[in-house]
Image (cartoon, rainbow over all chains, first blue to last red; front, side):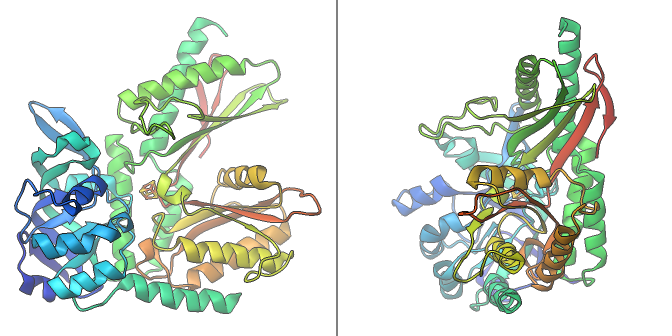
Length: 189
Length: 296
Ligand code: SF4
């Protein structure tokens, strides 16, 4: 299987080259961001980091303090659809090139991926140990006042395994599979 | 119960929690392996199952949680007549606190009104205990850790139903397939279904979870229900939903169906969905509270 290597920050050209179904390994810096982060950005707060070209990871990691730094113990993806009301705006306003999560997202995000040149990357749900293993270093954290799972963690990752399930050309694997599986199962009923 | 027995019981339960959180039961590991061999090389489904197997090995080797959502903690306990269940419960609570401190369990119990996390997994309704007495002379403890993502996609249908049909096996089958359709992409598939036909709303869900204590490779003692399980497996796996909803041949790793009597006016089909991270282990205990045998 051909694996596409992608590093962050990513360019629009690199993202536009990706298609639904591509296996991608991401290397570089990722920022975590889930409900509270998206809510703040939506309310117009300035992000504490430059998000241009970056990828936001929908994840509430388990972090442990060791020797004055942080070590990541588990870091699987969380359900992305909760960010559906906000994600398109973050794509429009902050120059991100994609998000990583699980379960896929809806039509607003899909349209924004197309318009602004972003991808939705699906991590393997539940694979907390593999995901944590690919995090080489925790480089920092912002917005810790939101609580550890909701904060913006700066993660240095190597070959972080994901699959493109929504691309910048309007393709969505979620939509495809939902429609085809409904056809099959409804035909059995 | 003597103090030394309680100490040994707590150590046994702590070990049960550690193993449940970090070591997927054999029958589930085998099912994941078998699933891998039926996916096309190089497909997204095969890739997802590869990452899953790799994760399972890493968690076992490091005694770390297989998934960070260590879920609802559900104890199913059989005890001899006259056994002190109150001390068992108190001891299990101490074991859960210890397991949380050691990181086998995430801090996962939240007040439903204030949102405050108790920090040690203890609170009203957490952990959950189902006690049963039996005439055997030993204690049997089975533990399940059930994640939130998969619990959210459980479903209960009341038959007759405009889309699903009437109060017969066809209606039941359709209800289960509908649950598979609705769960797709959520709850980290390939999944395992526990199903109860009948009961009331509460006992139906409860019994559907009890079905998940059966091993994936067992055969239903009730022939008709066994045949239904097979039909569901075949049809669900033809749906093309696949691991994680990526498409593929493995939507379910198992389907276990039981039945309870109902009142004539009701007919429920209750479906509990379990994710691939099917954390279930069990032990029998000797009179001193030490582990005698692992059950899965
Ligand atoms: S559904 Fe299961 S595997 Fe997925 S995140 Fe929840 S507990 Fe983990």
